[in-house]
Length: 109
Length: 127
Image: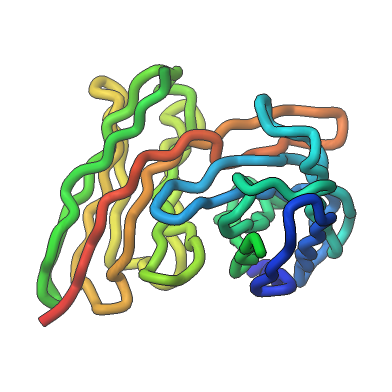
């Protein structure tokens, strides 16, 4: 099984800050990596697929990068509505289940 | 507008069974792979099961933690998926989300992601 590890597990930042979340895969997954945002009490929301492609309607302050085993989600200028938990997910092999990272909780100072 | 509506959650005792259902509307259900994803209280997301389309064989796959106890099925005539959960354990307590998979095909590959989500249904396993 492919294991996904995110860091940090939580962070606190101010509005306007640049925020970076890292996701590491236990195997080379090329660029088969998705990112989700989950606000408290809500279902997850797809932000990015294929490492760097923003889902329709997602603000351009969100960006993704990486390849192989190391990936990054960046929020260029943190906004109040960006609080929540962010999850990475690998989708390398369609015939297996797609594992999530353990999540990174983002709090606004 | 897309809707995924889960039902069937509740409180059960260890060893008992429960059947979750998910009614889908607003998108092409028949050609869509469907999944169940769960989230234990205060924990992260866990893929539980995934079922392919009937055209792709309709094969379900399961997380190791539920394999042999859970069965996912689909009814394309009713745009519904179900999750039959047997021999429930306390560790199965979670919000269960029904989620539809979307995909794009690029020159570099076939990219799949959980694009639509229901609101979730809570399953509590406790004596």
